[in-house]
Length: 239
Image (cartoon, rainbow, N blue to C red; front, side):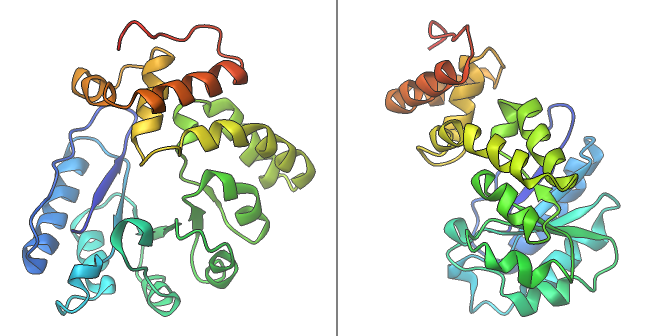
């Protein structure tokens, strides 16, 4: 359905939506956005239709506009066809750019050229950690990152180098980060990053910890990547 993701500096419960009626999903997306705003979220992202909804008569533009109109916090459109089965096309993105106070788009299609096709219309944030420097070189604003949950200082240093125009340094930092980024995507997100966070002592919650236990190969891959990166203390006994 239409997914809501909250950005906060503290824990916020985001209800899951497994219903398939398109009209109800649109209403529920609005209600979820209101809920996370009331809980203290500083922004939300929302992706467009899934492939099963493509004939349901609701345009991505309409859904994202409804969510944006319902809350006062920034709304970021989210293009992630690997999850939804279909993307938000460039022409629709340009229509979205006309909406006041839309904060931009998280571009996670893997098509780096889309950044250059969109960045003149609205702020573009890549959703792929391993494309951060290339996306920013093409006019992107930055990254909505997975790896930053584990190595925030290093990700920030890479982005700040790109912001300053030092792409040689930014590229060098990204090359160093690539093995860790690869590990954090060795399984469907967010399983690896949750495992990595637990391994370095960041509490993801008991339910998350129990869920991760069934993915021992992911735990091993993340543990090795974290050790190679330089983490001195990897917590295995919690599993």
